[in-house]
Length: 322
Image 1 (cartoon, rainbow, N blue to C red):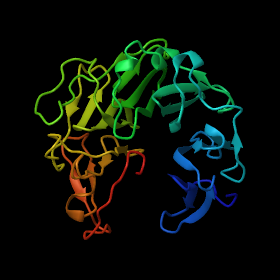
Image 2 (tube, rainbow, N blue to C red):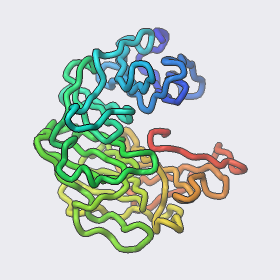
Image 3 (cartoon, rainbow, N blue to C red):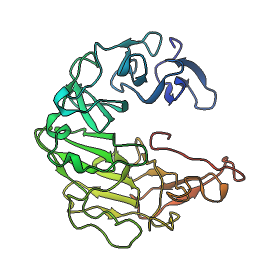
């Protein structure tokens, strides 16, 4: 991929058949590289935004086991670390998948796994250490799995403060640290009870978070797609708040259902979502593909469908598919 140039848009596409990398100067005509790791499941891959050359991919291989691969030349060559993230033998837990790879504020690399675990690497994924304060949480044995398993799928560092981070686990809920991972607290107050118009008052209530993103223009604001609705929370707020006006409501959950949530990289208050019919039928409503956008921090959402198929488009867009 040496022909990718500075200023190009780079898209990483993880699939069950390997990793594909797309790049484009104008986002109209795309060049493709790959597949890399042919026939191997890639749940997540990222490009290091600080220098634009290094790629990291969560590789789930039957041969190597779950590993994080690194390329320092935009995919021309890949290196696997000495070992993948691991729990202690005494825990009885074994990592089966890498769900998320994320770069920390201090340059460290983080991996989220199945079963749910958070791991940190100081050397670009060559070796890993367990974040024990979360991985051996005293109530871990009561964490319920989501439909895709008990997975840590979202890692949100705080750009202005290395001590702060949010993580999302399906379906154990949201956890927050403000001391660099020395300790964690649950962060779920205000989430809708499944199928009801009642909301949890306690932070320590397991909810099924599907995806969270920070507003890059104001990282103190977090948007969340939950199994039971769409929410936002500002740093310092006592609870999550609804942001659902204009979104289709799923009959089963009581709120909009979907998996993905994406924030605009520059425009404050702008985010995107792809609602689905519900947890009983995880496809786009009426077979018409649409992306919903808010430009005012979730006060209202508008349907965008121009250029998207509006007939027989029974699509499912998952949490990192947008």
